Image (tube, rainbow, N blue to C red):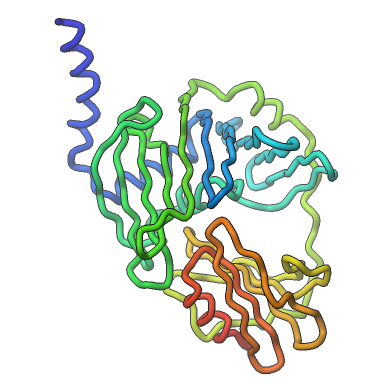
Length: 310
């Protein structure tokens, strides 16, 4: 009986200490944990009909973040991040590096950034508590303030504040994407694989040549909180030709906009979208615009129609 009582006290102690935390405070703690803690996650990514088992490892070495992502199914496919350099290692092409603060495709970059920047487009609401991966967790809902984006919910480990589950939901509460942690190991020190990754001489980030083309693209309307991250040349899905590319984000949702002069480049008449992606195609003046992203189609249409040259 004494052992049972001790176990109950241990289980309930973090609950008592966290009763006064707001939804934003939970998310702030998550952001810090994702940047500062050493941990290993075994997780499953669910997108439409795709199921991907992954392993994600994170730590800090000499005050620099180091992370490793491994795809467990299919041909070898890994990503390594040291500081702000992410290197992709795939079986059928040479390793290459890009400049990035996070490894894309697992959790929204905003989860490990300044949570306050999300407040222009979202509100944070506490939900209930549950048990995931054998650990007690707290649900936080990230609810859009408008109809231009989707909603999210995340369950946080009550001991480490690391995310144990992440859902993306449409406006009618349909699940578009889910990350589900099946095992979380909080470590005392960076594992050997991260130490080796830190020491490795990875390919340098390719320098971007200065470009004038496309630098003047702008938008007359964007949903609150969205901003332009990148402008460059990019190959559109289904096309071998390079077109102008503009990346937009509000920290949670990412939108890709492709622009080509009508007749210069054949844009696909129809794109097969999956994994929750929506698509809008518009002709604006002498340009054809394709917008793709995990937001409502109406949002993409309005963004595509609002593009212009400054």
